[in-house]
Amino acid sequence: MADNPLSSYFRRPSIYIRLPSNGKFYPTGALRLTESGEYPVFPMTAIDEITYRTPDALFNGQGIIDVIQSCVPHIKNAWAIPTIDLDAILVGIRMASYGSSLDIDTKCPSCNEESTFSISLQSILDNLKSPDFDQTMTIGDLEVGFKPLNFRQTNENNIIRFEEQKLLNVLSDTNMEEAQKLKLLNEAFKKVSSLTVKAVAQGIAYIKTPDSAVTEQTFIEEYLKNCDNKVFTRIRDRVVELKAESELKPLDITCPECNYQYKQSFTLDMANFFE
Image (cartoon, rainbow, N blue to C red):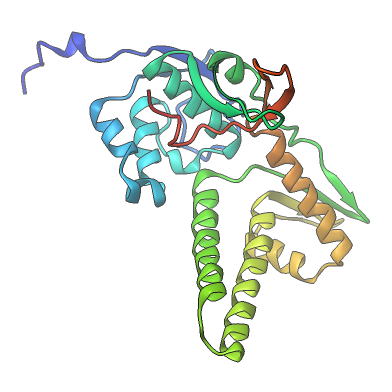
């Protein structure tokens, strides 16, 4: 096929970003590393925008995957992205497509004044850091190492939680017999508990005994189901803490009407991703 004479007019990288993970935690072949540690980010195409606005593709995660691999071509398998990189990548795509400022609507909790603020996405991007996953936890003669979940794990967990929440909502409104409702509620809570254990296990890189290092997911899950509750709580809290350290932080807002200062939660979701 002949070269397209319009190829020189194709989109070009708009910005370059650094990944909070510095390229760690990606399986072989999922990320093409660069010598500089910076990765080019292309603006979205019209097809990317259509993909990102498709509800089914967003719900199952495929829409986000397709857009990321289109806009950040060094990422070959976006399902494998560690969650500590996801916000940085989405912020980078938003910046490459629409610029570095983003308007958000907020309501003062003191005087109820509604305002619109322009925030710097570059500042948010600069403040995204990776937690210290080299810090381990000692429990008796065990050493526990941690790692971030990847996007596939997080997406699958969110879908299961969504379905379980739908079931609980239905049960709260149904007229079914109490015995049947109680049975379904117990089953739902067991599934939620099992999912919690699974998610904690996914955040564990290994558990070292004096004799070996255990990395198998099934063995780690079995240990978490059978260890002392205080031990499980310590491990779970550390996994939750690591997740929180890598997330977008609330914004500091000063109300222009009454000068009240408050925190505004911020997530780069479908409500504010597009221009």
